[in-house]
Structure formats: C-alpha cells, structure tokens
Amino acid sequence: MGTGIDHRRCAEECVAMARLSEDDRDKALWLTLAQSWVRLAEHVAYAEAASAIEPAEDGASVRRQPTVRSV
Image (cartoon, rainbow, N blue to C red; front, top):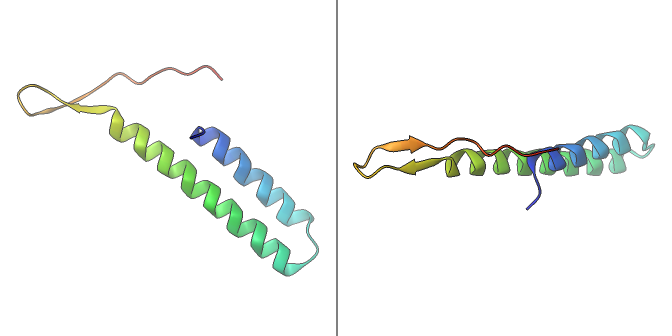
C-alpha cells in the first residue's frame, strides 16, 4: 500500500485531468476517481494512527512514537 501523500498526489492529478477535460462525463469520472484516492489516503492515515496505539501490560493503551519517514 502506498503512503497517504502518494494517494493525495494521485487525487490532485485526477482533479487536474478533470479541469482539462471538455466532456462533462469525463470530468465527473476524473472527480470520482479523485475522491476515491482521497478516501484511500484517509484510510491509510487512519490505519497508521491505529497502529500507533498498542496495549500496555496493565490493559491501558500506550501510544508509540511515530515513525519518521524521509520524503
């Protein structure tokens, strides 16, 4: 699975294609595809946030330090 940044970049490209398109059906298709990329980016962010929380030995939740990624 790609990163949320990758998915948002794909969404931006779809919006750019929609702007360039002259056919209304094509515009709608590109914008629908952009929405799907944004939802996927949100899903990735949610999954990363959920994996940052791990149960402690006493049953409480402990937040792990976020992983630093180079861009």
